[in-house]
Image 1 (spheres, helix red, strand yellow):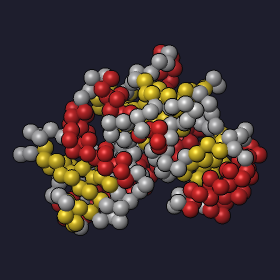
Image 2 (cartoon, one colour; image 1 turned 90 degrees about the vertical axis):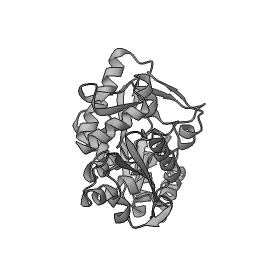
Image 3 (cartoon, rainbow, N blue to C red; image 1 turned 120 degrees about the vertical axis):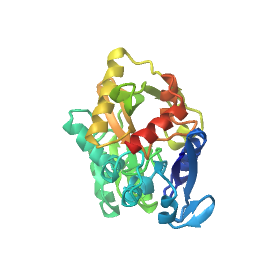
Image 4 (cartoon, helix red, strand yellow; image 1 turned 135 degrees about the horizontal axis):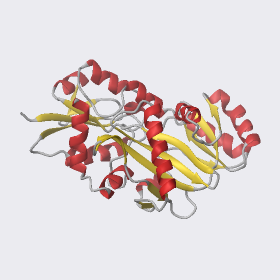
Length: 321
């Protein structure tokens, strides 16, 4: 009997379009001789759709055996969808609600990295708009300029900027709150080589299989912004040209953060390798990991000869275990 796999994509976040592309890749990659792929689309207003028709979530979920979650951003990473799937007894890919929420909140990740003795950029955190002035003032006093201003919970580099000086930092913080961010980080800018490493559980006989490290070289003087990620202008080197020792350090740190943040099935962690050491930036839970043609995890899989349909087979197996 064929397994019905529901691919959840879309959602309410600013990463809606990227989520659609990741979900589309999943739908295309599921083998037709093994699975019935069901496209479950959630629009920007939160309305669920099954086969193009509006439905209640409960009705859509009753039609599937397992769910693959491609809901980037707040909706997929808030834990809400994971709790809904558990309530309906539907196995799903990726971390549970708690692990997904932990990874989506960059302050939690940085705190756990510090506990694990992994370097991470120093930061100041504004929990709400009322803290914007105080946070901007402290960050300008504490860090060399420019600094990195980013929303605490968004992915795909949405809303990230590099700015310097009190007025510019304050404006960047206030702009993010105006756009709906539920917290804003101001980090010291660590310069170095950008790297990312994916972890897949249970692959090739390893409990935590580390995929090849990818080095990211953004165009010009840009950082790995949203535009740089999805325009195709960045140079992404896989396997990266790091030394054996540097590669091992990045992969080991990715394993540590996968475990510390309570991740499940797969994740991807981002780093900066600077002359002063390896700095952890954040971890993308399975719900946050992009699977588009421009995304990094599929490139890492291809580099070690793992075909994307085989990876999806592996995810379905992990979810149902």
